[in-house]
Amino acid sequence: MTDTPQLCVNFDRLQQEIDTLATIGRHADHGIYRMAFTDADWEARAWFRERIAEAGLEVYEDGAANIHARYKFDHQTPSVMMGSHLDSVPGAGHLDGALGVLVALECVRRIKELDLPIRHPLEAVAFTDEEGRFGGMPGSQAMSGQLSPEDIYNARAVDGETLIDAMQARGLNAMDMLRARRNPDSLHAFLELHIEQGPVLDRMGIPIGIVEGIAGVRKWDVRLIGAANHAGTTPMNMRRDAFLGVAELAGELPRILEEEGSANSVATIGRVELKPGAANVVPGQADFIIEVRDTDPEVLNRLANGFRRTLSAIARRRDLMFEFDVLSDIEPVKCDPGVMAAIAEVAEAMAVRAHPMPSGAAHDTQFMARLTRAGMIFIPSKDGRSHSPAEWSAWEDIETGANVALNTLYRLAS
Ligand code: HGY
Ligand code: MN
Ligand code: MN
Image (cartoon, rainbow, N blue to C red; front, top):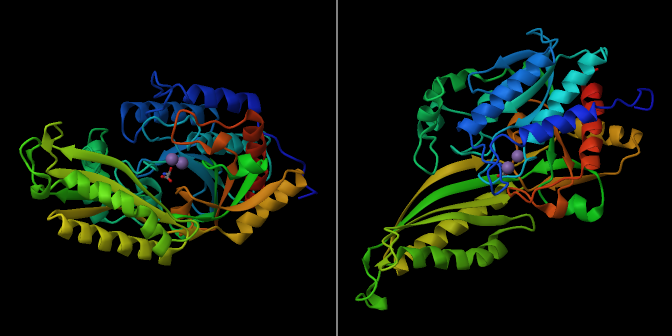
């Protein structure tokens, strides 16, 4: 790397685009609400397409509505692809996904502007629904050929809207997602820059993370069914209270993690809905979503079995029934050693400290890693906050990360 001059992004332009994109879908609580296929997501996509055209890059949208910015794409030479997502969780920060998409665009645009010699075409991509509003990560799943017709039929949001209807409302046919699959030979490598969304780099004071592996996620939608009854007249020992079933399972999480999990394991019940939901009615039904994560597939299986055993014991004891649907089943992946080495060499040549580490968050990279050599660059998240309006990264860390990404992309493409 010492022989190649250090390339730099146009940071003023990148900063301006980050600030502009952050206004799309922002609510009064300062959170971003760009959930997949909502108006805000659609507005952000249109804005992104304009930036691509303005940069003189080719705009391409595949059957899964993944938006590509292409440079020197010739439909035969394998590309180097870089990207992330524009969609967000409700009440998100302004950098999760968005930063990776804008840095990818800036890197491709910069290499074009500088007219640098490259051997591989470049693609900057915004993937569809990385946050899994409809379950999984349909955009990168489709591109990597991990999406089946059944997945598409079953994909629905927690509010019941199906992916098919959401895409139809945007004039898209969800079954076209099956056409987004890329031939592995069409890609040379994949790179994603993302905020860490955890506290490690911030605490260590290190500006760059080199991701070694990405945690897998198992997410279930569970319905615990008991019997609604009068809150005043039903004795405690005659209740089939669905909420107490969820509460007991939540109390068991630490034991299950201790017995079946590893140091990387986490489990979250992020959503509970009680029915009928009145203060003076014993809840007859509790719908909740539980997700578990770990970097080791074996541990994920053990945790899943542990939860299922515990849930069925609680249901039996409390005379409850339970049904569950798998919302996401995303396997953990290892990043490509060659791409990791490229990031490390660039960081060293730039005299920037870099720290190899796992990712507790899921990312499009874990599907792209099944298609081609894939790697991720992390930058620090202030106090490790994310999926919250408190999400923040220092501008100098954003600039350092963008320059490491630009030099890594150039290295991979030339
Ligand atoms: O949930 C995640 O880990 C990612 O933000 N989709
Ligand atoms: Mn996220
Ligand atoms: Mn993300």
